Length: 254
Image (cartoon, rainbow, N blue to C red; front, side, top):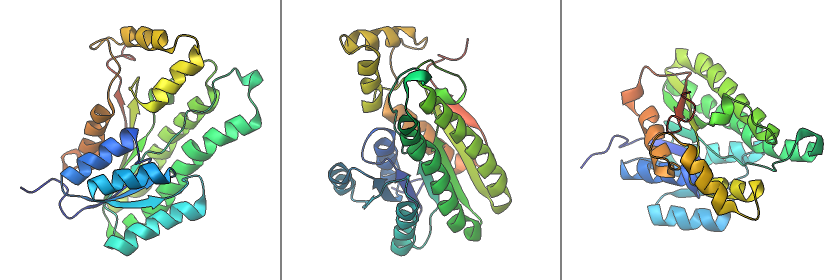
């Protein structure tokens, strides 16, 4: 049976777990050849072996590593058609007055610079092809503020801005660029945040947050986020570009 992405080459960052792994799985199931990128070597190799895809260990905050994963994709398959620019970290939660410059820079390096470097390198490949689809992972943090979470908030606002700029630059070349904005999704990152919010009762935080979600009263899943990413990467979304797509169970509807 043919898949939506037969013959397509995809690159996914943060591919060893969470949204990236869920997206890589869906892409592979639908026929794509997936270059899976992550900095966690053991976890990445295990995931890539299971899916039968190409692993590339890289730190997305480093220019040489980003150029390296793009070069690995082109060397292996000759092109890049799809890009899930997904890798991100949450950083330390604390009021601005208690954060160090290093705290901010650590988050910005991955979530801000890493997204920029990925866009820059992949657009260089896609422009001569005059085609391509890119989905950046932002967050509901791209449209709102939050106390004690300023580096992450700032970085995800930047992802939205980079998405819009890249969409305008890529449009004349047939390249679509969008971003997804997950709300509360049950991932390693979400569980770590509950521990930061209340180390003594992270399960209580999880339950409280779940109850706050209007739709179903629960956290979303990585697979549900991947479903949206897959749609935006597909030809079914051929006239969608430059936009942010919330997936938050109506949490931000009010």
